[in-house]
Image (tube, rainbow, N blue to C red; front, side, top):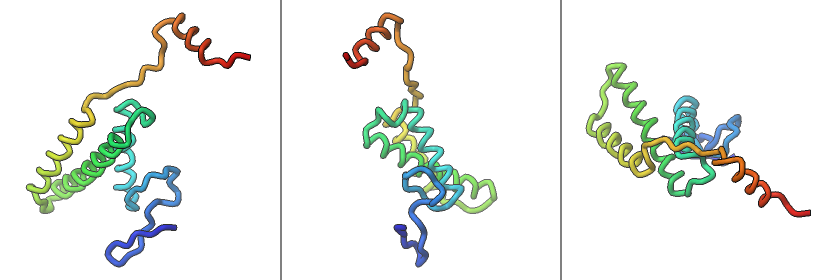
Length: 129
């Protein structure tokens, strides 16, 4: 298994129990939250199938910034010190990323417009034997 060296500690790049091949942080709660946010962004954009690698990359960056902002917010809620300048810059960067990928949810239209169109589509899709 490939390892990542971080502060003289070997940490696996992926969790062995995770079915996904997406490289996530090995920290169970933050890694899971990151993956949930990443998948939510992909879903909001209509699914992974129709997205370019650049949009998927922006979704990963947005999820990473969101998890870091949430971590900082938890520290604030626990009355711990947080660098507000860093928090503000991260929030601004997140806003810009979300604007560039689109803030609106896009649903995939899976229903044909009419029965006639569906029948024509099926006739084209079926192999002629």
